[in-house]
Length: 240
Ligand SMILES: Nc1ncnc2c1ncn2[C@@H]1O[C@H](COP(=O)(O)OP(=O)(O)OP(=O)(O)O)[C@@H](O)[C@H]1O
Ligand SMILES: CC(C)(CO)[C@@H](O)C(=O)NCCC(=O)O
Ligand SMILES: [K+]
Image (cartoon, rainbow, N blue to C red):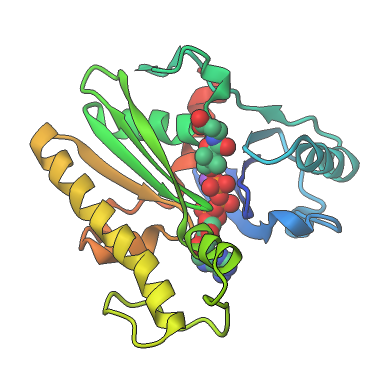
């Protein structure tokens, strides 16, 4: 059985498979990893554990410790490459690129076999462009929906966080809805631009991340949702 783990700044996501069959999956806040992370898997024999992490070294150490104690296995940590699985990185210092971006790009290119764009709507929103030849054209790193709102709550005197409202795209009629819908509006505008550029460039769009479903709905491209893109990339980057 193989366990794949994607550790982001907000959440750790994991998926355990036996061949092509899904055994179990889960998600836990990155801030609260103490305790037992993979209790559903206790008693199972894990043959392989692959991790892609953009969290702190302390977080990685804690996850590795739990895997060693619970399953007597050493995980393989994926690293961002200069090139691999048909994709060439644009960074002069590839190790500085978040491995989640690299994993998602590699998985997207493996699926599309042509030009593609990955939008990962997590703690941060990242947009990455890959050419038909697999060359990374570059990307964008943008504060995610929560971070956009936190910036306002933390850096203004009168915009205060109160109860969250249901996110919608309409102009807000109080502070809460103006802030929350403002973030959704930015996301929708970004999405419209990305979708247009995908059409012009003949690039296939891939959407993932905690706010990926919202993003896909806002731009009416739910067929582009690939929630496991980062996890999917692990098999290529750890074995390619
Ligand atoms: N139940 C939820 N609780 C908290 N955030 C949520 C929830 N559902 C969706 N989100 C959104 O999902 C985002 C986190 O998504 P995701 O798990 O993909 O991020 P991450 O991989 O941890 O982040 P990153 O890779 O950018 O460090 C949050 O910023 C928030 O906007
Ligand atoms: C941008 C995030 C936080 C998105 O998860 C992650 O990919 C990261 O920490 N990247 C490092 C900086 C970079 O990718 O250039
Ligand atoms: K992520």
